[in-house]
Length: 429
Image (cartoon, rainbow, N blue to C red; front, side):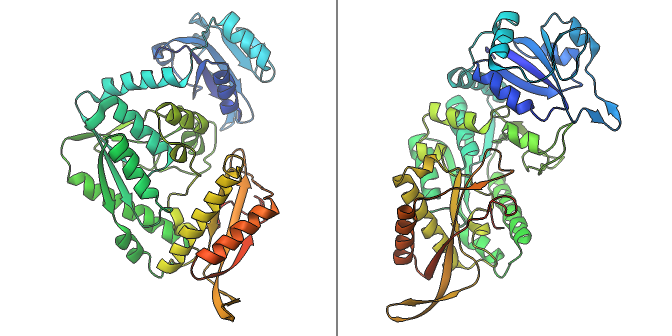
């Protein structure tokens, strides 16, 4: 790595990621490491220019305040302490202002503002080639932002040594699998294996209404299909993953509780036969998108909406039926198209449609129609822990409603969900 680095040691602050982002916004790379990192490990990190000790409300673990190795103060690196004063370093009681941080970074640490996506990509290509050598890497390519950016980066680094497997479980959004195959198979020339497992998944999901059971079936079946395809290949030594920094944070650290476990952080089997390749491990979501843009991925892939792992399976509420699933897919496509036309696609954090497993009475062609309602959800959030409802212009909502009622089969009603989080969650299942 050629970029200068500032190391943040986690002594219980809940604002570690905020500080790391503030440093990166100054053009200096930063990484967060546990408080008990050894001096040997710290010295092995490339181009470290300074260390920040960041304490906070989670500093007390099992009744004892966590501390750093005292030898860290003797490494000759500038050390800044936030929230827990010591005599051996420059002390600040709270997070420094942008100006104070800038002064410390460039005047005290003598760091260079050389953190940008172009340099990051160049470094990762070098590191990937060094790690993989002549080996082959297998990647489950869902079409999501993270896996797509990893795939593009690996293609650039090792070309045909990468084998991508895209499993279409029948719960993708409209034309999503086609776009993945076009971009990676044709445009980027990736070694891509496409598996259409629609019937297999939907058969397994027949008459299953419980959301958690649906998620387990979808997740478990995906792993089985992926493993079956992997066994057909030879010489695979590495497994590529789109793990990003928020995945690690939400899965828990030594001073933070688990928010939710991520399969790519703590859910891998202990006897995994592959070595992991995770080039996005220290990136935040917006940085992942910036990386994708720099790599030349199309905007509709880089800026695609957050999408749950079970796909439309948790937006076709209750037991999934093929006709209702198709109605969700078509109504969602209309919503995304009209949001883009109105410029809302860059303003609203997440928006989608869903269809419950009940019908309502309506009138179509002068006759009674007993069909489904479509529910629209559009929310804004910073961290997905809370969310506010977006106020969609009435004329946009009316146009979306008119199109859904005219173009989507089996639908006679459109509703707009006005519930914030909390009490509601963003997804319905």
